[in-house]
Image (cartoon, rainbow, N blue to C red; front, side, top):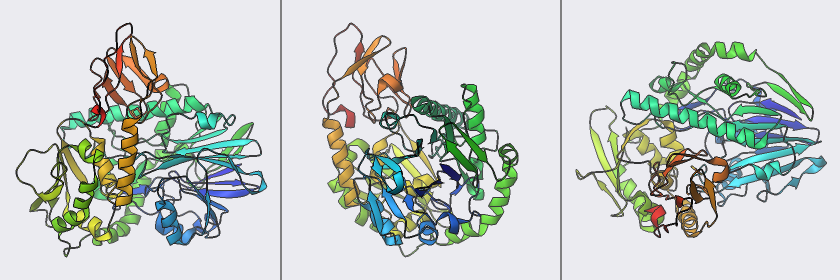
Length: 527
Ligand code: FES
């Protein structure tokens, strides 16, 4: 099996029975904030796009690049489609000209022509991608590969059961706006960033240890930030709180925990993987490339400047009445929302800075009041400050996912009182009836499902499944004193009270070993 690195989470898998192009991403994403790192735009995409199969793991724009798919990927390719709850990905791909779809039944091995086998695991919680993320397992001639990209399954047993895996591709770096955009003192930001960076690596080690593949390929990040306004987010400034470590940092951190089987793919690197080993050739020596990272980024920044400027010029739509349009788009959804609105629990304020950077218009999305209205000098727990032009653009194009556009752009600042609240982001990811209904239904089911099994961790008996996204706490749970940490996303819980210390709601059931359990009050998790 041959794997060609094509940048970020993208790769082309070639076998004698057919080729699969995964997640080709080249054009900047999220308001021209993210670019693939290392640069992959100079690869021969005409040739790379001439494939038998296309796999797009999910709709995040650093995986689903509509313009690139349209221009470069053969429309004769059969799309290997994850079993997502909505048809959005298929609809979008059909619009781009794809007509052949293989809807892979979830977690079932499918045999394609010539003995090529695949299995796709679709994750379907509202917090996975924009309604769904997925991983692709491939087997040909005894060689097995798992392309986990940035999916976060609770465990990898569905793949491990299919036999020893030879190549494991997974995310290791950051892909979020936290903590950089928060209005915090620099020292706090650095401390939170460092925690986040450590947690990302811990989670990666956990997955690697779960699967015990012969070779581990760090993929799906980091992006690079080429706009001068965002340049500081690149991990080139010696900031230990930077959440975007690169592949060479992965190798050195991995070595510290005893990892010796890491393989970095640059765009254009080719790995030949067999059941007994892997040999990789690179377009330039890997160490030399990372030693010259700053020069690479600076050269790329100059080359991409016109692309960024052209994108920026398209954002302003002064004809859009932002308050009115937000009312028209968001108020009907507030009416429909039960779980998410209850989970947010209060007003969310948007401060919109005018084109000249002078005046500010404040708009409140009032979840309890079910309305969008001007800010009325009240206390709010969640506040975002961004350019008015960005919101105009989102409203102009009818964007249904403000996480997969505005928030991932990092072109905003944020302040909050108290804990992270996942419901805020779940709501702004679901600005269509179809998405909102799905998310509401998911939380409804999630709330009702009783998870009766308990396990013992240290001195505590706790529910086996994490209250966040049901990670198995026998694998991901760590108890230190009276605190439980689930390493899948790093959420922490106070065991004595059951309270989640990371996010609103999500109480854990726990009691000291040998003591009676106190039942959790009904509905606590979403309050
Ligand atoms: S499943 Fe997300 S923190 Fe446990």
